[in-house]
Length: 452
Image 1: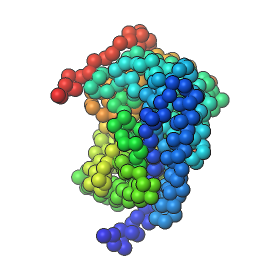
Image 2 (image 1 turned 90 degrees about the vertical axis):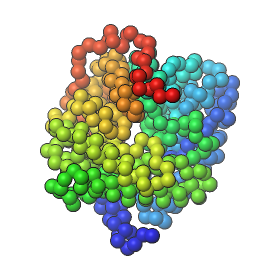
Image 3 (image 1 turned 30 degrees about the horizontal axis):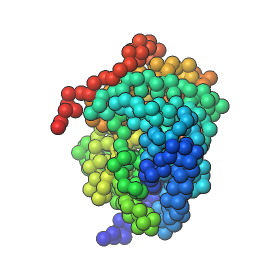
Image 4 (image 1 turned 120 degrees about the vertical axis):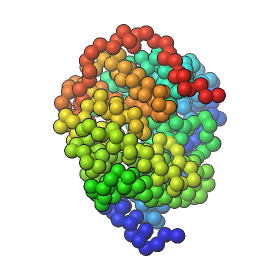
């Protein structure tokens, strides 16, 4: 039972500490849309998405008004298109990409994810067609997001896929050069991708999921930051307990919204993803939380330890507040989307190497990082390989969302606007790695993957 104090605390978190529901994401299975004719397949996909998503935005807005809780995004995730389109004729899957985009526009959602392929152990013919269609699709659509899983702890790292994705990212940047490579902001390369992630750009509806499902992503870096200001100078035991209690309250709100959306849409509730997802707004930064623990600036020695504490405490607090916690659930560190991260990069306190170390203990990986436009495809592939190795060895999800910004160099800034923020172009290690990437093949799974 909530008392007046609990209610007033929640109101204060919403009004002054940037607490919100970051997304309600409707996952939809598209397996029954398969068709030999790609145009027929695209039409079936459009029709099914529009039918299933008809009331999503309406219901989200109703809940927002009734509960007074901001719901920032309403989104859709679908079955990886490489699987749905496997029986289709033709080579160009951008036809399906346009159908996804048209359906998303018709339904009024912010993004649709699932223009995806899972190639951690090898390629099907459909996987190759999907991946080769990514640059065109992302350059010609506004709302479509794409992801490719290139590694798992059980399978190892598909280095052929890693090499290919470096080229795909470069081509996507070239085709969206007038927008400073914006297409790459809608493309994620994963290791150990999860099937129920509600956050973009990496969301897709996994093969183990139900016909339709509602997943909710909450967010509250500002709430955690404010809570830590109240325990300034206290021990890390107190810090961890404070974060746990705060994550519990945040997740409780997400569970309430998820239940309401599930009941009204008559679609099963899936998970609450309790990730701390920052925005460029002042007071809504993961980096500032780490600095509140005693660091002069994010990137200083001690940053990785502070992030490890934060990520673990968020999980411990949130898991007690929801019947089903899933997705990524922890702390995100996207550079362009976090005001404190942007500041740290501009002051040369935070570089790609330090961010890579931080990804060992956070929820995802190298996220929304802008690099010089002349960065080679092989270097991008090597960055992906490093992140994949962290994920595979540590049995966790890692990812790379990197933006080689055409005509930009180290020290420049790219303005994307909105939640995507501004990305300072970061310096990349220029030492050669082309021969490493050219080897191809598969880096074997680690010995600790043999658990059967």
